[in-house]
Picture 1 (spheres, one colour):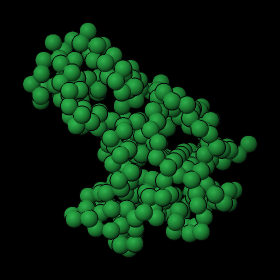
Picture 2: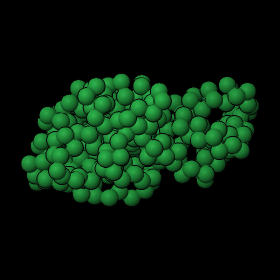
Picture 3: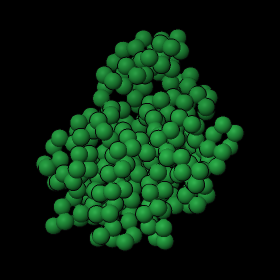
Picture 4: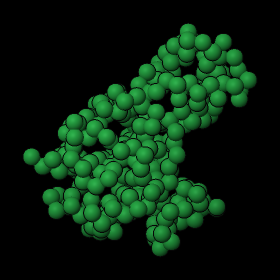
Length: 261
């Protein structure tokens, strides 16, 4: 029976096993997403679905991947990544020759590897730090493997594909040189402490189901984690309407800057 008691118990079990706290997510959307899974599996309750999925490591990993919405691809929204190359990173490099960058909620790794390619081309002799974090251990493992389908690399320029990837069957593997640029780490954006001193933080297509309160807290934490002059880059549907209240200035649409003073 999918009632409130069932939902509360489901949330408790999920948090105990994965540290995912559904109270920080928009309830109607999450109930609908998970309810679809319950119905498709011909189960009667959220808890029954959870208990069944938890019996099998692969089933449970697939469930968590569905829950945390791991949709990603290289150079997602290429025109915005273009702005990173032409405007944002040159501005940051004026203040600091070595950048400290965080891809927060990095999913399958397409975003941090895209960044590593950009940095290698812009500053070939400099080793920047690129931290890539995600909550989902299975997805992080995929990111570390660095093997991608044609769909995941469809926005990649052919010359970059030839230079930084090698074919593996019908897939493409990131070169070791690019893999060496990334530091992967498991991190829960809604729970774990943040490092600070970042020049650039990317958090794109991550907060779609967060509550407004959880989003505000997250953006406030990012603000603290940025250096003065540092920039937060968000997804194309995630404009921060109250960015001034949180202390940011607008560098460009979807790029928010921590003031220098």
